[in-house]
Structures are given as structure tokens and as C-alpha cells.
Length: 593
Image (cartoon, rainbow, N blue to C red):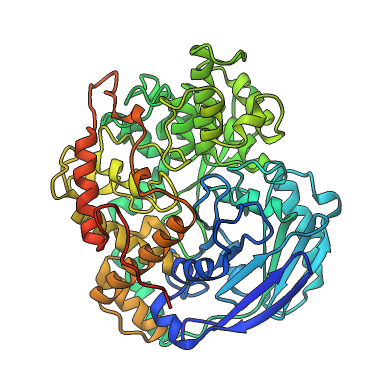
């Protein structure tokens, strides 16, 4: 079928074998690719109730029907599994140049199971895979690992036009830190839910992808025309220009002005030193160049070189808004250069910066509550840096924090102040000021998440009052459904305003030949949500966990804003009803085909 390879690569690391199987053609119109296809595979193939770090837990890489085409925002891949951080459904996405290398191997999905006896590197290509000892690559940081994998294994493929790219884990993944990431292109991360730990448990240090395949398109000329029109029509789009000029750090100012910038471990909604960690500070104090993934005209990435102080000469891509909020707001680090330094540590070790920053701030609170004795406090950059290294090495209290917020909260008897939903910390949008984000965090299928709906966009732009809770679930579900289709196609979130429903239908038709109207796409999105919900319930998630932590129902100290449990409960019931679930959040008993 056009837009699809119709092939899945199954890999067994324990046996060091692979096999290639076709996909039933009638499944493609039902699930498309990306999140749709991977969720079905995970539900079908994962034994119920397994430990996420067990060999039987599947790790699935997937690309979408637009990957490798001229569709803007399509250079992304997804990774899916059962999360070692939350114990439920895991999904994470990354961009850069590597997604097209993954796709060029000619598979709609790659399903990895088993555990190697020794650390290894895989080389995946259109004919299957090869298994190589990782040797001295094991133990290296992510940057060195990516370089060495290319050095050792790229030379083996001399196919003309071949694309090559590697994904790797760092020391944190090797040590099974439950929020370890998978990285590519140095600074791009499949960053949440701990998929780096799944690779580490399988003794898989990295994968080199090398291929020359290209997805067949239904109407390549039409796809190219639509891409040209999109770029032309959005050349002066204010949102596009804002991302290109300032990147995601522009959100620091916006969120502080909205009173929704999580500060001092979620106790306040503004940080008085925010101008020192803003996009303006980054651009004024450092050398910054916009940087884009393939097939992107937004260039939201910031290639940053620090030019002054003790970190002069440090080069990173970033820091992104979420890293700035996590270390700058929650930990009250008041220097953009120091946040970049902490960002670099996490990148090299291979850890999610959102969880890392939350855990460092939580540790500060544990010290202040007298639960632990550790030399750390707000704004103490060197102590935070030391703690990050200890977490990655599972050393001292780092061994507790490496198992995540729930483990640390239980060990230190601080469950009442631990800010998490289903084991994952929220992003930098306080739900007491943006109440729709409370619904987003409570209901996200992978734990507290801003990306499943990006509903902060609706509340900040005036589409709906942030204080409103009545009838909010309907607009929320519209956002969520469309972005579920984004994840099935694997499109970049920042193109959400450029691809309304009508544009998605047009591009899907041109690429695949499938005539999917809005109702069919919404039905598909709900079907994908159902299978993920069933997976989570099967894995032991209690629907009562669709809640915010107690701490987020307390008033913000600076503004007094609050989200009441009754307000969240009303939105939640509306959300369940719109999904077709019962009042407990249980989908109808339909077995996925």
C-alpha cells in the first residue's frame, strides 16, 4: 500500500536472530503507522504484567507514512514499550536527521525483544540486522558513543545514496536509571518514560541504521505541491517566526506572565529572576544559531555556545524551555549559562532533564523537611551537578532517585508533596493557572504529560479561558484526537497550527491514497486511545490514578490560584463520556483485532 513498506522487522537479542514479516494490508488503513501500529503491536505481543526491564518487554521503533517524504515536520521517529518509570504505556519521539536513516531501512516498525548476554550494538539495514559486541563503547557518554558507533560500523555500508544514523544510550541507561533517554544527533532525545533503561536492560548500547529505501507515495507530485504551498503560506506566520527567532525558551516570559511557571518545587507560579534565564538572556549572553531538523522551516532548535564565565566554550543544542523550567524554576538556578551546563551533563549521561530537575528540587525539599542529610539547596549549581552524576551512577542517595519520584517519596515519607501522576512529573505548565493542563496531566496515557494535547496552547492563546472548567473537555479532546493522529503519522508538535484536520486529510490522501475524512480520523484516534487504555488497565493501572497529586490542589503561594478536586472531577467525567468510557474511565469490552 502506498505510504507504507508493509514490513515489520522482529529482532531477538538473546538469540541474535531476526525475521521480517509482512503486515496484513487491511491493518494499515485502521492503524496507519507510528503510535497506531506500535500500540497494537505492544498490546498484542507484550505478555501481561511483565517487568519493564524483563527480556520479554518489547521495544518498538516506528516511523510514519510521511517519513522521508517532503512533508514538513515529518523527520521524526517514535519508540514504544512498557515504561520502567511508570509501569504503564511508554511512548517517546525524537527528531533530527536520524529519523530518515531509520526509515530508509524499509520497515514500518522494528520490534526488539530478549536480552543480550553481553553489551552489543546492532546494525539494521533493509535486509535485516547484524549484531556486534559493544566493546569499549559500553560505558561511554552519549556523544562519544554515537561517534564510535559511526566510526566502527558505518564503513560497512557502501550502498550509493545510503542514509546512516545512530541512536544510543548513555551511562544512565546502562545503570538502568528509570528515566534514562535514547539519544541521536547528539542532542535529540526520545526523552520521557525511561526508554533508555529498556535498552540498557537488554544490553543494547546503540543501533546504527543504514539504508536506501524510500516509501512509495500515492501521488508524489501532489505531496510536493502541498509542501510548497505550506511553506509559502506560512513564510510570515507569526508562530513560525517566533520559533525561528527565539525557540522554546520564549515560553519562559510567557509562562511567568501567565503565573504558570513552576517555581521552587511547584510552590509558586512566577520566578523573580526569570529575565536571567529567558530567551532574551540566552541570545544576549551566548552565541546562538537557529537549527532545524530535516524537513523543517521553523528551526526551533538553538545551537548555543557559551561565551563567558566558567563554562565558556561549551556547545549544546538548547537549553529548551522544559529544561529551563526544571532547573531554572524548580531549582531556582538563576543563570542561563549554568542551566546550559546542567543540560549538558544530562545529555552526556543520557537522562531526561524534566525528571532530573524535578528530582533535584524534590531532594532540596527533602533536606528542608529534615528527611535526609545532603549538602544541596536552591540555586546551588555544583551540588545539583554532583547529584546528577550520583543518580546516573546509582551512588548514595542517587540510587534512590534513580528509581524515580515514587520510590524517593516513599523512602523519604514525602508522598504528600511529591508532584507526579502515575510516576511521571509534569512539564512546565502549572495546572492551578492553566486548569485544562490539570486534565491533561491527569489523563495522559503515559503519565503527566503536556505533549499528548499541548492544551496550554488553547489556554494561553485565548481560545478558551484558563479558569474555565465547564465544557472544557470537548475542546481538549479535539486537541488530543488531532495530536494522536500526529503521533500516528509522527509529525512534529510545532506544526499543530499548520496542519488542521482538513490539511491532514489532504496530505494523507496524497501520500497513501486513503480517503479518511475528519470523522474517520477522530474514530481512529479514539480507537488508539482505547487500546492504550486497555493496555494500561491490563498492566495494573487503577483508573483512580487519573488525578493530580495533593500538592497541586494547594494554592500557589504567590497568586493564590488553585484547581479544586471538584473542578478536575467534573472535567474528568466529561472527558470519559466523550471517549465513550464509563464513569470509572473503563472502555467498552471490545477486543482489538
